Image (cartoon, rainbow, N blue to C red; front, side, top):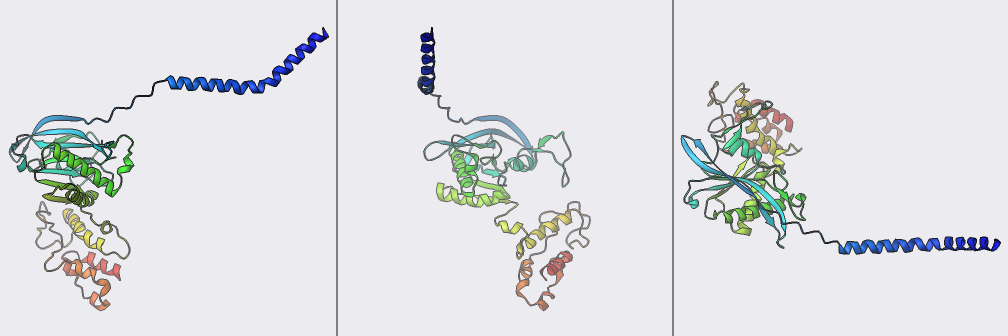
Length: 348
């Protein structure tokens, strides 16, 4: 009996001493089994490349007594890099007159807003599209419900229109390994939109059509670079570039110390706004006091540019002796004496 107990004790001791070596061996066996299962598991299929999509509908609109049939085309165009890898899908909405036989006689305009970071919805649904969101004139838009109406001011009677959204705005987005932020730079933005326009023009046989760029705010800055890039890189010439809310020099829209230009450039807009709301105590002589539309043809309240811009004496304030500054006549700005005096006080 004592010998049996001794044998059992020895066996237990041996098992305990081998336990530390058994655990790693078991782990290695499990790891080997897991790897073999992974090798046997089939690789995940490569996702299909992004697909371009398009939807076409037929419409008509009456402009100036003329009924114009047109197609509305909502679609995307796939951009690729030099390695033929998909990079982005750019969305656009096109309105093209459908009864045109000779496309070389029909202009086409590429239209976008600014930001940077804005889709083209504002110029599309608020200004130039054949349908627009109904909003009050020069006052806040009330809460919903909102409604759409035919736009008598659409450009469709003069040009086909392509409203496009830069990558990362609207329905345009990066695909594949690319990210939206890869396109968020002056050069990257220009290059991607140039590629889109070149593809669009080629696919729709519009190389011989008169072509225009229409941009708003940062879109004017974009148009300057985009027109130059398309001309030099792709050999595409434009018949015109339209600048809306022009800002080619960002320094002209910020009131930085020592910079006089914003004051000069803002003055006509402030004057026109004051004229529209009948806030001028001394309206210009050539503007009727109670004209139903005080701004017509040109900005009636804008200072005259008779022989030289009224900004010239303002620009020279820092260079002229103080006694000559006092001799600058406020009447030069015709109806805006307080603005001019305020500017003199600011500069002194």
